[in-house]
Image (cartoon, rainbow, N blue to C red; front, side, top):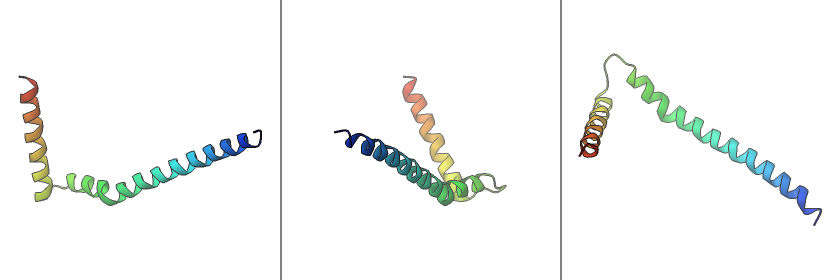
Length: 71
């Protein structure tokens, strides 16, 4: 039973390190793929049609949720 303890500790440490590393890699790939492009588009002087449509949808959805919560 004594030999089992260090293996568990090593397994937890390596599992934690790989888990954190993989989650950071996934978040970075999401940032590279879509988030950075969305931020660039939002900062342009003339907004793309897709961006203005998305903003309009968000505004109507938030207005609807505010009107429902005030009832």
